[in-house]
Image (cartoon, rainbow, N blue to C red):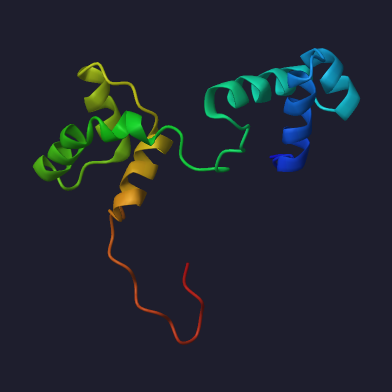
Length: 128
């Protein structure tokens, strides 16, 4: 993922567009994309300044959080249920969520889905 461009560059592009230069000309002048210059100008008009947002983060957790009650009810009903079974149970209710999304849902809550208990360490041979 590319790094965010500097705040100084953002301010110079917005200042140039405020002085009457088109977004295309400002983009060419400062070496940024046309869409970037347009987006920065729109942000500056709405918020007063084009400030970079926080990078990264989970963008899709809200999809599973809406159905958290259903998922935890399935888990409480059958503690030995697999992620694939949870996925198919949700699909039967009209909710289509991927296995990876379900895994992240459980990971955020610290719920493990390991089926067998951990084995004790071997003194002679590393265990897998």
